[in-house]
Length: 120
Image 1: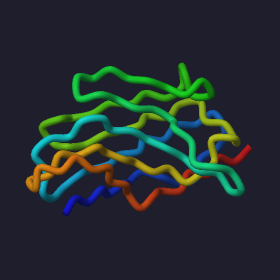
Image 2: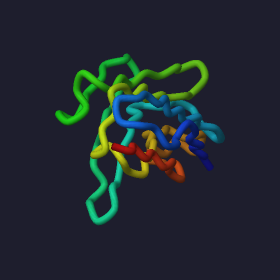
Image 3: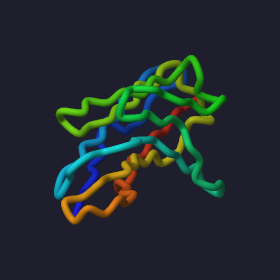
Image 4: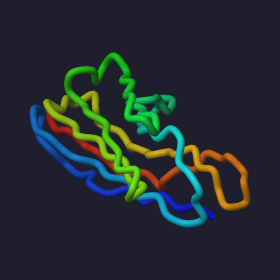
C-alpha cells in the first residue's frame, strides 16, 4: 500500500504565495510521474502541473509563469510553489503519483487533498 500526504494549504490574499508539499510512503519500488490537480466547487478536477522522474515539468496554461513544480526523488516528495495567487486558484489541491509497488504493479495513488483559498 502507498500513502500520499499533502501539506501547506491555507488562506492567502491575492498576490500572495503558498507552497504545497506531498510525501509518498509505503511499498514503493519506483515513482514515475508526479502531479498536482485541483478541483474548485462545481468544477471538474483539472491538471495543474506534472513532473517526470527526470525532472521535466508541464504546466496548465492558467498557472504558467506563476507556479513551479519540483520533486525530490530520494525523499519521494513533490512540491508546488504557487506565486501571485489569484482568486480563481481557490480549490482543493490533490497530489498524485504513478508508483511501481513492491508487488510489481504500476498504479496511480492520490492524496486526500488540501484546501487553498485566495481572498480577493
